[in-house]
Image (cartoon, rainbow, N blue to C red):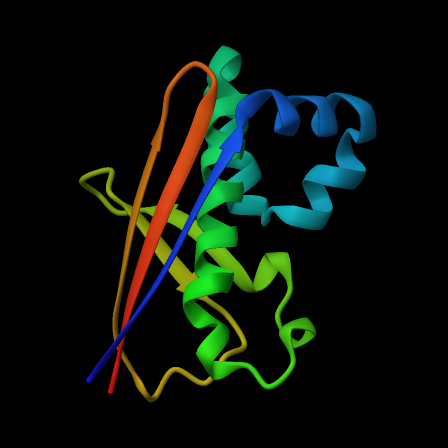
Length: 124
């Protein structure tokens, strides 16, 4: 068993500026349809949720890097952040062989200025 960890923090304002300046081009490049639907449902706090998911994807890239020969083999949309029925965020990795991944855990948080995420992967 091997534990792999990734963490990321981002200023919410940076994500807001990217969304405001690039609009759908940025959003559709980074986020899945389900992620967009979730974040847009948060109305005035949508930028915090976009930023938290962005940080989670960055943290996931760091945690999963041990499986990648080439970091360009995985894209933003290959990592999807959803919430379970209790509201806990979940990380779904698409297009990566997961047979040697025992478990994945994700924690995200945000406040007025920052969003952060930590991803822990236990490999077999």
